[in-house]
Amino acid sequence: MSESEQPPVAGTTAGIAADIAAGYAFEGAALDLGALLWDGDCHPDAPIRIPLPVLNRHGLVAGATGTGKTKTLQLIAEQLSSHGVPVFLADIKGDVSGISAPGEDGEKIRERAAQVGQSWAGKGFPCEFYGLGGTGPGIPVRATVTSFGPVLLSKVLQLNRTQEQSLGLIFHYADAKGLELVDLKDLRAVVAFLVSDTGKAELKGIGGLSTVTAGVILRALTAFEQEGAGGFFGEPEFDTAELLRTAADGRGIVSVLELPSVQDKPQLFSTFLMWMLADLFHDLPEVGDLEKPKLVVFFDEAHLLFKDASKAFLESITQTVRLIRSKGVGVFFVTQTPKDVPSDVLAQLGNRVQHALRAFTPDDAKALKATVRTFPNSPYDLEEVLTGLGTGEAVVTVLSEKGAPTPVAATRLRAPESLMGPIDAAALDAAVKGSPLYGRYAEAVDRESAYEKLTAEQTSVQEEASSRAGEAREAGEAGEAGQAGQRETRAPRSRKEEPSLAEQVVGSGIFRSLARSIGTQVGREISRSIFGTARRRR
Image 1 (cartoon, one colour):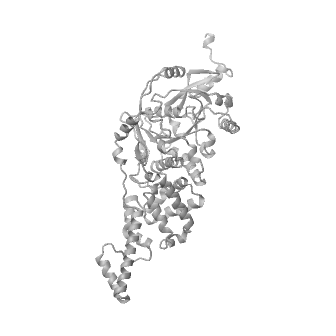
Image 2 (cartoon, rainbow, N blue to C red):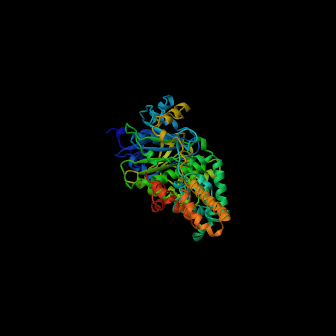
Image 3 (cartoon, rainbow, N blue to C red):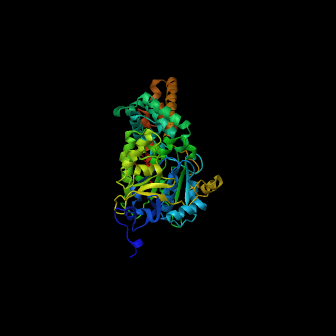
């Protein structure tokens, strides 16, 4: 054997690089991230990969602005689609829509492909484009207030702990009385009723609702609606099962939620994404470990999820991330530093792609040291490596097929094969209106719900009271009872006299309507186990 053919000696530079490369030599299906960087050189014969079965063990893509996080997200999404795995992406900056179109060849692309041993060919991937409540381009995605739940809504409205608990009480009452909260006016109607003279007694036995707290909630709802959020709540409600579809050729459909038009409302879109995850958790069966995930979800700008979050919200995120793995769903958080993600959530993220960090300020330097401590022991000087990485380079560690962390590997990443930039507005509009889902979700529907039911009942009671008062003046107190019985026989809208408006609501058939539209009270209450969300089974 010639000297050049001798195997690398352990402990030498070549030996260390060989040991790292061996940690990524998986036998089963895997995604190709790029090639190993060691001692200043790129090694195309040492590919860095992620086993497909561990993509439901969640992950983190982090790095400073401009270091290539979005392109990494695009690269992973393409390969998942090619393996038949559906993907959900939140496109906050409006530059991910290009995944539906073939990439453009060029000198830089060919140079990168040669460096990492990639056979690059431009191709587009099957996509669906969505928008929150019809705001901006995309098929409208809506949720009812009922299914959104009190915990997530409290996060959006920035309520404190006491106010959040009161909102939970309001939802509990609406559930119990069969008052479905479809849009924001439904919630306002129930809140207003519960602090009215007629409704105050309804919650007295379980703590009641103070007028001050109700006022805070109503003002927050008004401000929220003035920001344009009213359209996000309503029907037809989006069925998150749409995200699990594959194309006719077997590739996974990439669902892109277009968010540029609402990027100034971070509380809304980040919380809305968590509703989608909680809804998937509610509907999907337990499957354990699979050969490939059912769905992989990417949360861009993930720090917005956790900013000013209540303890209940953080506990719910942690619980969801921990448990949804068993439903076959993987979650990747995309943000600037691991410090943006709470430690209990970070502990669940087995796959890590860390782009460059900057150390221009003392706070930057502190964040850099904290990031280094989150990695396994490594032969790299990670502080030096992380500040010296170029665009499209990252430090990687993932879970092996056996579930153990792989060696830390500085990596030059592959180039995405789809367009690295947005498609034009005309192409996006054509893709949206050409979707088979467009006709299902495009037009909003405003059916009878809590607002209409409470308004109708209150109007009926007021009309009946007014009519009785007038007849009492004409006929006198002695004949009032008999005349009232005749009125009930003649007037189809009249109701049996009840001691309170809430009892009249229950007796007026709302429970029967609830049974037809959203199932039993027991089913509703059970479904509020995570994030307080609930929805009818389809």
